[in-house]
Amino acid sequence: MRPITNLVIYEEDLSRINTCLSSLQRKARSAAVLLIDTSGQLIASAGETDALDTTPLASLAAGSVAAAGALAQLLGEKEFSFVFYDGERKRLHLSLIGGRAILLVLLDQNSAVALVRLQVKKFSREIEEVFTELSKRPDPVAEEGNPLAKPNIGEITDDDVENLFGKG
Figure 1 (cartoon, rainbow, N blue to C red):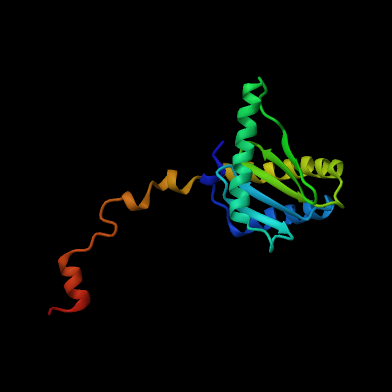
Figure 2 (spheres, one colour; figure 1 turned 90 degrees about the horizontal axis):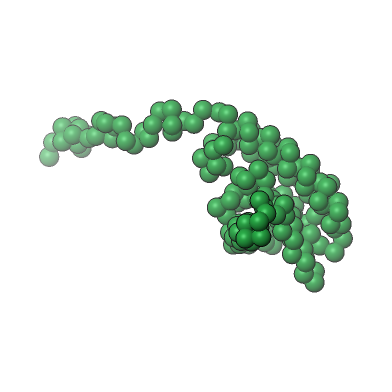
């Protein structure tokens, strides 16, 4: 299983992911949903995200899930299926999806936690299918190697420079 950071996500893949996120956000009646890789990089989002500072939110969510994983191991568990934060006005539901990504669901007072958990389970299966398909694609870097490491690529001679700028 290649980590998500090593997968190439094309426009049609991102469109499919966004469709899944929008559907989850609507069905779970959540304020917003974010899909984050385990290093804390935002992959995609749906819902009311304009007022959110998604970069630190994604990073902190990844740290929180990593800490929960460490706590689970200390307690003899494989992992905790989700992390839940309950504030005065906002609630966060964080879940690890197939060990590759983190789903952050932002809830408000109108969101039902049981409904969110049900919809997250359905979404997790859908998005895992997308990641499985992506990981079955050939890895362009592994197949062709690092293009910058190939000999003679980018090699410019003095004659090339003189021809380009004229002899002067």
